[in-house]
Amino acid sequence: MEQPEIRRRRDDDMAACAEALATVYVADRYPARWPADPGGWLTPAGMLAAWVALDGTDVLGHVALTRTGPAMAATAGLPQDELAAVSRLFATASARRRGVASALLATASAAAVADGLRPVLEVEDGGGAAVRLYECAGWRLVSSRVGDWTTHDGRTALLHTYIAPAGAAR
Image (cartoon, rainbow, N blue to C red; front, top):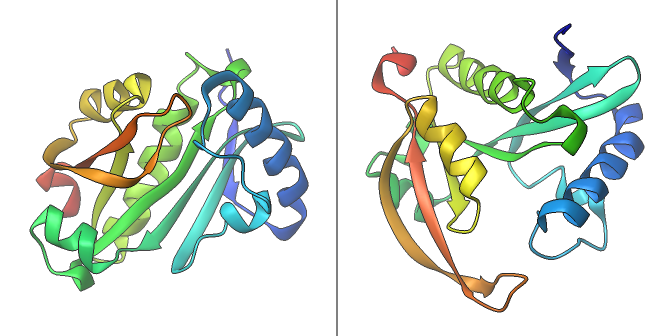
C-alpha cells in the first residue's frame, strides 16, 4: 500500500481538513465538541506549523505543532520555552491502520526537535487508540490532571500529558 504524501498545510487545504475532521468527529467524537469554526479550531493560538496527509487531493489526516502554555509546561516538568505541543492530530477512518497518524506524529515531532524543542502532548483518557499510538512510539506519560470540560458522554475530562522520548530531542 502506497504511503500518503505528508506536507505542510496550506490555506487551500482548510475546507478538506474540515471535511476530514467532520468524519473523525462522527466516528470518534474528536474533538469532544464540534467547533463553530472548524478551520479556527485546526489553527490554534500559538501554532508554529501544521501538516496534512494526502492521498491525491483527499485529506487523510492532520497535525499541528503549537507553543505550550504554562500549565502544560508545569505538568511536563520542563520550561515552557523548551517545549512544543503536538496538537489537532487525527486520521480519518479510511486512513487507519496505514501508519498515517504515526507519520504525522513523527513529522511534527521532528520539526519540534529541529527547532531545539521537546515535543509534548495531551490526550483525553477516552482516547484509547491515541494513547496506544503515543505509547508504541515511545512517548512517556508524565502526569494526569482533571480537565475543565466534559466529554461527549458527560464525564469530566481526564487529561494525560505525554513527552516524546528523550533521544528524539537530542
